[in-house]
View 1: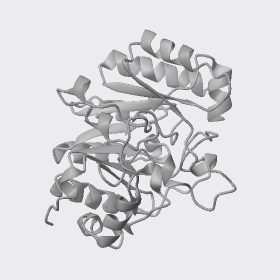
View 2 (view 1 turned 30 degrees about the vertical axis):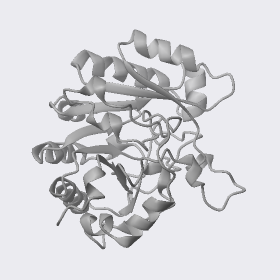
View 3 (view 1 turned 135 degrees about the vertical axis):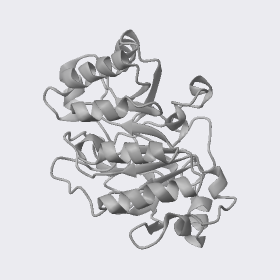
View 4 (view 1 turned 180 degrees about the horizontal axis):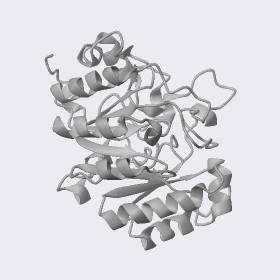
Length: 296
């Protein structure tokens, strides 16, 4: 596969390795839940996608969902990505991390991202719809910091009078330094019911230009927020064919150019690829990555 000028600007790929989630966040941009299907992509499909990403020279991948830790194959995907020379970020709600998964995330080149909504358990769980999620997420943030795994966090303001500043202060007290705050994006469960499709105005401008997403069913779009703009499917085409296609170029042209006030890349709103390079030596020099609301 040859690398085009457009491909040379891509920095990372979000891989939605499952549509299923153990939470039901009220603002989830992918409408994930415990009842949502895992998706049509097989383990072999994901292995092929990872190989294509490395061959195309895109430097980093982010494993997301749904909730990526619900995939029993996540440790294998992490290992394959690292063996291919890719940087890895796992975007998780950190509600439940298996010992085997901690071992995989302990490897050099892996970093974590999570969402945190309040210093108060009742308010956090009002948003995640998951009883006990606040204590579990907090405990696993503490464990990640103890292990020295690079971790960033995002706070999405979902509720009026939400304790956003207090959530940020608590994260800092736990040792988390990379924190971004964002508003709810009107996609997925938070979409405007009066609109047939979301507006490109909800996008920060980095999708398609700097970032790519592969959905649990193989659909390729510019980021997890722009699923309503599919360019192809890796179950029918190779990733390079899709990214070099006229359809990809046409969709890119419809996206407003990046702007300073666009969504700050942290949380589950991953429109900007920035923090997926967080494990690199220039961690503190890269622009922050987005806040999506896909994970709790």
